[in-house]
Length: 273
Image (cartoon, rainbow, N blue to C red; front, top):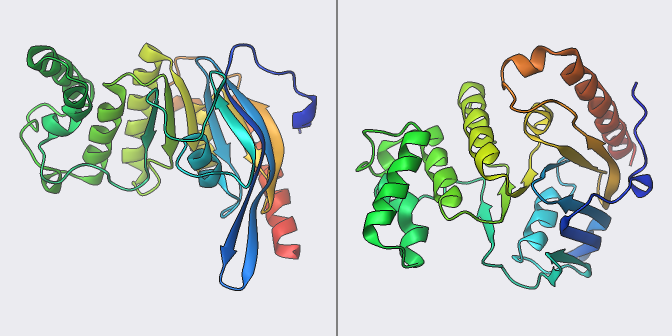
């Protein structure tokens, strides 16, 4: 198995955009306290796609929500571009796992709503929305409402709605988790094509190891609760990536095997605990 460095031994990436420093988070559940995050520290560099993986319930979404300013840590801090995160920042976009399209708005109005809020002139808004519709292969559905769309199509709308406002940082919380394999692979391909154009910072939560390897520059593996950073693994697979053929390469299979071994250690420790 490839030797993986301890996260504390890794050099800090250049041009840090997100700095997550010693995050702890406790929750009070009736008569007991749950320690979700024990000590989580890592950085995300400029133009980097980083995925968070780990056992179920280890606090991946908690880290993301703190980084997005949607939740406060018990202790520790998150800085984005040197600014302490205490609330949602305008430069940060967020895509949730659940369907967040507005059911009373059409596809084109859903995609363009952020531009409308920002006062972008109608003609420019129509042009940019039309470009996103083409990229998402939603031509012919511009006037359709979300109830008329499949789950995959609605998630395409959510993707385009986030990318059209050009956030500098994008947080994604298992956005494809509820979709079938074929739809998920199609959306992986679309996400990578969009990101190759914009190269903003992405922090991505997933429970799917294959998804994390396919999309990421680096993977942060969290331990079982109370979670800590068990390993930070570089994904040195060439870009652009073909989401189908990538999974047949020896490089992909070696990375998958190494990460699966590390996850297996956490599952064993959790079951023994």
